[in-house]
Length: 70
Image 1 (cartoon, rainbow, N blue to C red):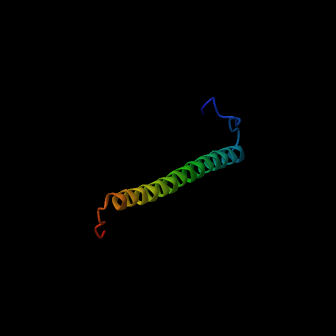
Image 2 (cartoon, helix red, strand yellow):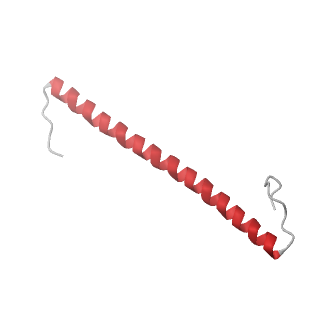
């Protein structure tokens, strides 16, 4: 087992079961954190794209260029 892990090495089937469950829970927690971060970044990117589209529309209006249908 990796030495960087804070859990003791399992000595019995029960210990092994708890050890594996703990590792799986840690992996699930890390995956959830990464998923939340990815979704937050995607949401932020969506807001930035919306702002960019609005700014482009405003610039086109100021320049007297008509927007074409999307």
